Amino acid sequence: MLTSFFAEKKMLTLALVAISSWLLVMAVYVFQIGGLAGVAWVGDLYSILVASAVTTLSFMVWQNSTPGELARRVWVLFTLGFALWTLGEAIWGFYELLLGEEIPYPSLADVAWLSAYIPLAIALFIRYRSLKVSPESSEWRRIILFYLLVFAILFVVLLLPILSYPEYDSPVEQALDALYPLSELLLLYFVLLLVVALRGGHLAFPWMILAVGFMISVMAESMFSYGTWNEIYFPEGGINSFTIAADAIYFLSYLVLGMGIFGELQLSKSN
Image 1 (cartoon, rainbow, N blue to C red):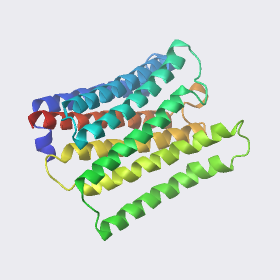
Image 2: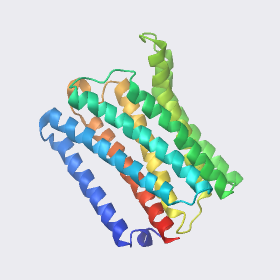
Image 3: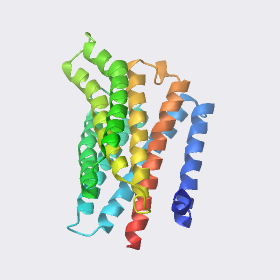
């Protein structure tokens, strides 16, 4: 199935371009080409680029879907969610690159990023319900066990320290810090349901790629939240192994999402 998915020339070309661009960006991080400023420019611009690409591809699938069909509603919601993520990336880049200052917290970027989880989660739920497949009892147990494991990890390393920290400047900051991991957990739940419901078939494979992209995104966002909370993400304006790994996974999540959406676009055009 994987071989046939990448057999088409367009898909293979896109995959090679995505991997090559990712490797080039990570080379800038690893070798710190251009210093910290160079890493910031490349990282921020690449984030905006890949987020915009994902949004554009999602918009194309939306426009290619039949009016009135359930799929059209799903892709409207996806496009809205990805557009909000892109807006968050652009606001972050505006502060860091153009204004040359640290982005305030909270900011409009946080509003955009957190708001995006709502349409994305709804889209995943609608897609899951449209498949009309209920997980078997053994599958439910695996979903619940895996979800509880992830929840326990995030609760111990993120939520508990955030909720018990006594020196917040405002309750708004504390609420936002807690909302990020909670939003990631919400998204992960619907992604897991979708993965179980998608059982084989060429038509389902792009959605599996999309689901994997979302899971990588949850991992990346969790690492970012953990890194910023513990001040090991760009510590004191420097670059360490954790920063490189977190951003590498973050960029990869957009690329995998883009591959899944592009696959769905190709299938929608062939129908």
